[in-house]
Structures are given as C-alpha cells and as structure tokens.
Image 1 (cartoon, rainbow, N blue to C red):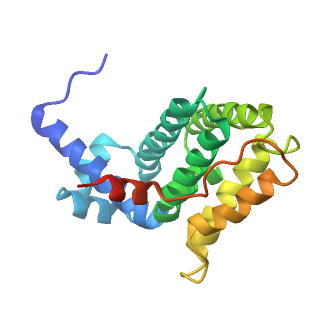
Image 2: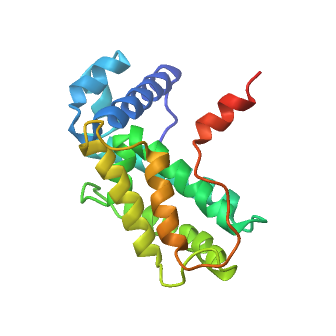
Length: 207
C-alpha cells in the first residue's frame, strides 16, 4: 500500500487536478503540461511526481467527467416520465459538452488513454444510457429502431459540430429540438417539454 501523501503534497495534487480540469475543458488534450503546471502554481516536476505523463493526468480528468455523466443518468432511471428523463439527459450532456473539449474527447473515444479504465467507464455510460433509451421506447415515446450506438453518435456529432463551427451553428438546445423531433418521428407516446437549458431552469429558480 502506498504511503499517504503529506499535507503539502495533497494540496499540490489538488491544485494540479483543478488546473487540469480547467485547462482540458477549454483546450482538450492539446494543452501543454507546462501550462497546467503554470496554472496550478507549481513546477512541471511537481506534476510529474503525481502523474507520470500528461496522458495519465488527462485520463484521471476524463474518468471524472464520465462518472459524472453516469451518476446523472442513473438518477434519471425509473423516472415517472421516461421521455422527459431521456431528454433531460441529452440536453445536459450536449450543453456541457458544448463548453468542455474534454467532454467531447470522453464521448468520442479517441485512442488517448494508457489503460483500460476509460473504455470500461465509457461502456458503463453506454449501458446506463441504454436503459434510459429502452424505457422511453417502452412507452412509445422514441422510435424503436434507434439504438444506443445511434444515440451516442448523435450526441458526439452535435458536440463535435459545436466545437468546429466557430459560432455559426444554432444553439445546442435548438439543434437538440430538431434531433428530438427525429427521434420521436412516427411515435404516439407522450410528448415531453421542448428542450430547455438546465442552466436557464436554475436561473429562473434563483431568487
């Protein structure tokens, strides 16, 4: 068992992780490790003492992002309105992915990970999304010819398009509305609300 880190080493590791989260979210894997060290206020050697390479550090951040998605999806399983649950998850994922380049990398599945941890986490996410999709299909709210692979391709494609479009593409919620119409085409199940930003809901609820 590895010896516990000293308090100063724990603080440095936390600072590196926080800086890496921000740097990878804005620039993806392209951000230099030296830049992460600069943002954390430590030397590059300190980063390497905690993480053997930039790819290993990136993997830690990606695993955290994927686990957040899994947790959010699991909270929506067995919701009273399966279609609403699926739409909520799609809306949240696309909106978050539109402002986080590392989220795009996590969903796209680029061969960047040095271990099997990320593929396993991605598989777990696909299974949870599959449950949301199946429940929505069971009540006739989503076309039954849509697979999890189709859904993942749509999510990843929309996020990727947002990152490559330089602002010319319509907002993610409007685009999701078009996708949602396609997913529901020909269905007679319950119609849920129009896609709406989770942040907008939070703003409305604020005093």
